[in-house]
Length: 299
Image 1 (cartoon, rainbow, N blue to C red):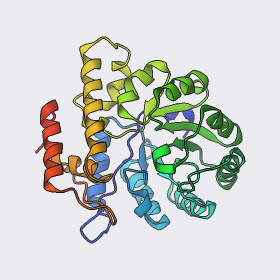
Image 2: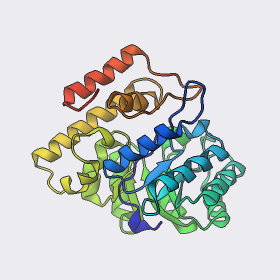
Image 3: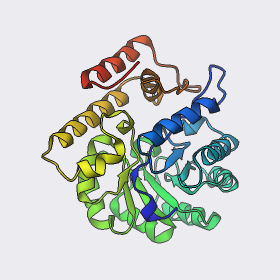
């Protein structure tokens, strides 16, 4: 996978689990088919939506291999490899390489909450030295506890084989400066859904985000919709993206709301794995109300 291939709608797929905690591969196939039908250009497995924290290296490998076999060679599959230690990252890299992943998605050292520039550089130098697979840097302050500055992102691009960035910082000043400096160098993929359309106008190449799969427009059409910011299509898509994202982030413990919403539209997403609980009736009703308020389809 190269920088030019990292573009458009790149969803992070959920991992469907049964009541006993087993991966339901038939349901995973249905999730993949749904995302491809919505225009996905690549698929990320074992990301935040996939409950990466609850997946072993072996399970990550199984998910990658299943996705590659199910989708075929034309759809790149990206594996999340974030972990606190390099030992954990190395195990996930092994699973990626052995099962045909096309790229790796990695935060800085998760749960450490702080890292010096030298520590950040050392982590990504080690990842690059451990594999020939391209790296997509993931800046998620809420998940990693580390908020990368634009300078730090640029320094990591100088130190490692980074082709792109999933940017989940919720400060649009940061997005603006990032795109001004690095949009021509790496593929910047927007994380927060309410930033997707304006970010396209500033040079983002796509989005790895939660919520676009539910909008009335095809998510793969958002790049074109972004070209006409005064249009009805732009205003409707932005309103849907904002409302869906706010609701999903507010309801339940992540990613229970995402799984419940998929179920509401007829996509078998299973339930979360321990320690996250299935969404309760009141919260599920809130998701139904959100879909109804936007006129989106549900069962």
